[in-house]
Length: 225
Ligand code: HEC
Ligand code: HEC
Ligand code: HEC
Ligand code: HEC
Ligand code: HEC
Image (cartoon, rainbow, N blue to C red; front, side, top):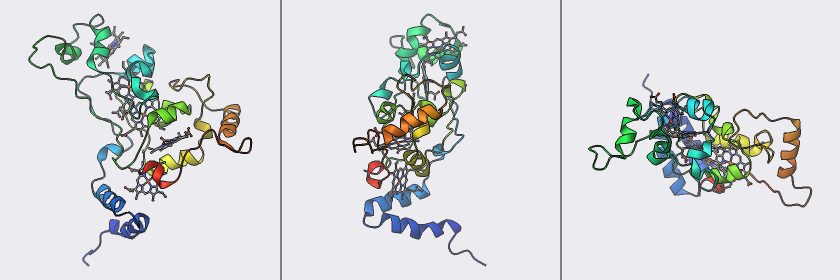
């Protein structure tokens, strides 16, 4: 028997229903369905142009994430460091390392290949989904909640699905992810406990002054603007 409609088409009516009233969103979701990028997958771990290790720099050397990801507290994007950030140390440390040749080349005037390091993106949301790091950092959600133990990764790997269901699961019940103010968002070993969850519930609750201090949204237009 010929299969006229492959299994995936079963989902189309549901999408149509969801997108009702918004032709733009409809186009976007049909397109996203067909071209769902590989790099939104858990386990995605591309090799990078320089074998930079988070396990060494953030783990063994204990460097804070914000030394390199400087925009994470103020910006939507966390930002990837430029070569000068690395060169600050590597003009002194391991300065002849073969692994750092392409980095050094950028500081040689008129070098034949002085182009920036082209890091390959690991985490990537579709354009139609809005995400902002700074809001989450201000709410004391740690990097670990969304990126896992980066300090143990030789090569960065995606550990969470970054799907809508994943975003919403936390937005509906975020207490275990909200840290006390005296625990850094970049601390990789912190675990929630009863006291931290109770304190978080107070920030999320509105019986006190009727105004929630933290309010993770679940309405569509928060993330699809
Ligand atoms: C010495 C600089 C440096 C430090 C410190 C650092 N990173 Fe990075 N990070 C990078 C560079 C360079 C990349 C891009 C190459 C790669 O993916 O390994 C990156 C990539 C990442 C990515 C993947 C970005 C993408 O493309 O999706 C995440 C997530 C990340 N870092 C989180 C962290 C966390 C969490 C910490 C602290 C525990 C941290 N980083 C500390 C330099 C740094
Ligand atoms: C609430 C979840 C969440 C938290 C908390 C979080 N991230 Fe991210 N991160 C994401 C998502 C989602 C993306 C992909 C964003 C995109 O493609 O627009 C991302 C992307 C990145 C990237 C790639 C560059 C970029 O901004 O797209 C880096 C680097 C990164 N995060 C580092 C960090 C660091 C360091 C921390 C802690 C200080 C952190 N993140 C906390 C969810 C989170
Ligand atoms: C705060 C200083 C510091 C910064 C900033 C820094 N590194 Fe390093 N890096 C080190 C130290 C220390 C070592 C380990 C040296 C050793 O093994 O004795 C190292 C080792 C390395 C190595 C291994 C070299 C080899 O031959 O074994 C690479 C590759 C590397 N770093 C890449 C980078 C990149 C890329 C950046 C920028 C994203 C960066 N580093 C930023 C201090 C730094
Ligand atoms: C681990 C928990 C957690 C995860 C995962 C998470 N969020 Fe949030 N998010 C929060 C909390 C807590 C707030 C409330 C912040 C506040 O009220 O100040 C929030 C607020 C927001 C807001 C409203 C603030 C703003 O930026 O306009 C948006 C939008 C948002 N998140 C998008 C996302 C998206 C998209 C994802 C998935 C890619 C995601 N979040 C994943 C915890 C999370
Ligand atoms: C907290 C943020 C958030 C909220 C709220 C949210 N979405 Fe999403 N949505 C996302 C993210 C992130 C994706 C991308 C998921 C992916 O790449 O797998 C997405 C994807 C989608 C898709 C495409 C599905 C697919 O499989 O590609 C549709 C349709 C959609 N959302 C509709 C909605 C509707 C309707 C609502 C309101 C009921 C809503 N969203 C609320 C974050 C959100």
